[in-house]
Length: 340
Image (tube, rainbow, N blue to C red):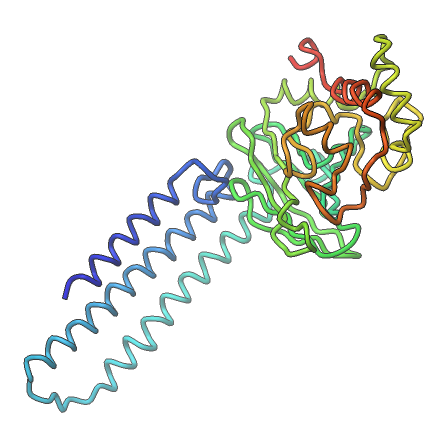
């Protein structure tokens, strides 16, 4: 008799353990006020659902037990019970949950710290198949791909648009989803309470590489963010090392500059991501592979082996020239002094 109840209890324990785990970017491990409101609503719905499941299971077991005992037939009218348990109670529960969700929706649609939209740090995010373009306005020329740096304890406004199909911007530990719709700019507020890396993901199917369209929100102390933004806003320096200078030359000769741009050089392509800060990024291909020498070399040679269907074709760069090109791209990152 109690086996179904035991199984239900074990399932609840497992679900709670998974929810509290810090091994994945879960909305149940929030890093900001927006995600905390979502977490609160989730737990409310969880406990309501658990109570309902327990009550229904107990009722079914009670009926089965009474039938086995051949209890006398109960001729009482069940109408009152049906109206209360099947209509009135669910209506009250749903009305309360709906009211709470409206309050949560109003909360996350505004800056928590009361920042005026005109004074907020505003970052433009553009969805592409299958990567994210990130632009920092207010005079900063910094352009990133699949990475968003923000200061901690600061209200940040995001302007979300798409260059092609429908995408959905989702950082589970910071904010719920917001769609990117063609011909429309959607706005959302985001705030991180503590420094850290918060993985995000496109949450709307957008083609064959939808699963490889991740990004990282990097929350930093204000002083570190200011230093990083100052570095990211500067053009790439002209290399002094002959090997790196040769790598820059290969970048232009191989045709990379027709699709990619590097500020401070003649490369001004707009088809693919801006590579001015490529050496500092957390991944290649929007979370497809790590950003290290080995994977970068394999990616430049033939990105289709990692992410079939993307716009970048295999590159016919000789093995003798490839090391200098990779070394140059990997050099596009802050020095230890600039990273402070």
